[in-house]
Length: 267
Image (tube, rainbow, N blue to C red):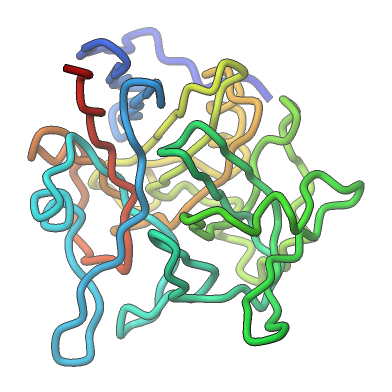
């Protein structure tokens, strides 16, 4: 499949050292927002929404502002009360486990060490152990054992530079999630370690956004060697310097977010 093409594509770019934002208008309904971040200049953290009256959901913009981040996107899938519906680990604290083998991203050292794979979790000796599910083996339990940040999504989009075309291993029961256009959020990494954050969509449900195969190809065209889709729909959100870059009909508060912070300049 070829990347979506529009003869009247519009590009807007915002660049600072180690941080590059661009938006592409691919048709009258859909814009694709992309941030590329060098982890040598910026630190990346997973952040959980604070609980209030039994609900753990906040808007991405609120979490970003409270933490003082430069930019943010929404994280993984969640239930009505804000509890994660998949794996979630923020700053070394477990909030959710994976009972279905679903695509996930984990990292340490502020984002300089990154893994993406399909995961399950199990409890062993009062510890939570991550069990990768790729065949052939892509990562190991040891790779994930000391990662302070893990965010679940689905599906894995790209592995070893190749677009994934078969999603049956991730047991996605709602096929329209794959085949219909929806607002999408994805995250990936380039060969040189640069992170890629993508949010695609618009205001017209069913016409704006991307299918999962289109999302995978787009991430591939951006140069990603590994990539995974995160929570989408009205939860898809990208915020930079306090400004929400994408617009949807509604703004869902979310369970967690991935935040981007400038690293302190050595004195």
